[in-house]
Picture (cartoon, one colour):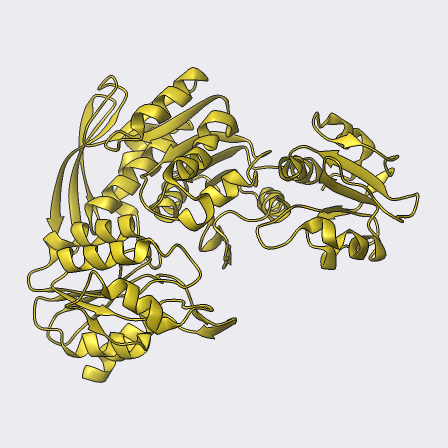
Amino acid sequence: MERYTVSILRRLSDPVTRRPLPVEISGLTADSRAVKPGYLFAALPGVKSDGRSFIGQAIRNGAAAILAPSGTVLENAPAHVSLVESAEPRRAFALMAAAFYARQPETIVAVTGTSGKTSTVQFARQIWQHLGRQAAALGTIGIVAPGFERYGSLTTPDPVDLHADLSMLVERGVTHVAMEASSHGLDQFRLDGVKIKAAAFTNFSHDHLDYHLDFDAYLAAKMRLFQSLVEDGGTVVLNTDIPEYEPLLAASSSRGLGILGYGRSPRLDPDHDLTLASQTPLADGQILGLTVRGRAYQTRLKLMGEFQAMNVLAALGLVIATGEDPEAAIGALAHLTGVPGRAQHVATAPNGAQVYVDYAHKPGALETVLSALRPHVQGRMVLVFGCGGDRDRGKRPLMGEIAMRLADVTYVTDDNPRTEQPEAIRAEILKTAPAAIEIGGRAEAIHAAVRELKTGDMLIVAGKGHEHGQIIGDTVKPFDDAEVARAAVAALK
């Protein structure tokens, strides 16, 4: 870790210092409770509270400097406490964190999109590992690195945590990192200061409109990755099958970034794109026919669904974009394993019915997983799902409609109700899913669905994926869809 001195602060172009700077800052935080003597406290305006309300507490805890929005005035503060003002304090805070920790792995790639981020970064990590690189993945399920795993809760962490983790990974010998870039993280400047060599865009559908308010704002947040954060001379990996391809291409091309297209519909020079030429479902995976930079390949994946094939292509594009040999990288695809909670096979009933768990908790993701797994189903597709409380209510009827259209039997249950009434959430789903079976208790719904499975059926428990808890009120209670599903199947035996 580099000591955070005056000279580092003065390298930043935006902040304006209103008081003398301390000679040295010993740490940074946006949580006034975590402030220690010599720290810089970032007083950031938030959705629920304004960090400026906690400046007094931070100073009492020993803050040596305060970063705050332009126009902030320190009242009754000791003379030794510095004030740094910024028109974009969140961005300044991220750049300060990058300067404070200084070290980053030499190759960092980022993935954004509504769905598929977690799988894509994990597949990129696995490909690099197979090629002999010391690689890590960072995102929704935490950090996965050689000899080290840590469960996480945020897709894109706070800038201080993020840069501390990147520095820690360098210390552990990691040279390659694939990380998720959420729309919240991009909008709040959490990735600013990260040296991103390549970035991928997976897809775009309804989500997070409780935060972004409309689709334009949601897309604009994700576009920042390509417009501002990928380093000059870097490469972007774009899904050619989605309507957003054209604006993404225009934004990236205007900066002179390299472009790799991937999907079923090549848009660029065939010698440049990664094309999914064919896909053959198998009982335990699929066979892919690929055209990569003008050459044809065939590979077998131990993964179910076309959406996973697309995630693999995005990961392959990132690996190739950062200098790996295409043929060697394609050779690694047969060794890929699934990501916890993403179309994860968790149990087989005594009659042969299959049980899967998936993280799909938004309309696009639910439609994708149901459509992708349908070719692998010989009997009925059975679905158990719910929607989270205190989140975008608009997606509840959309998901009910998707369930009615694509599943043969649907159980509507509770997800993470948080502070909402669970029955009210279910009622909003049932408006468009009148034929669904309503069972409030999630474990009870999973057991009921498993008991009704017949030979050839497939059950998909959607919404929570890898999560190990269920949020009811303000309490997180232990709950694991995979464990509950295995227990339900064991009860049959």
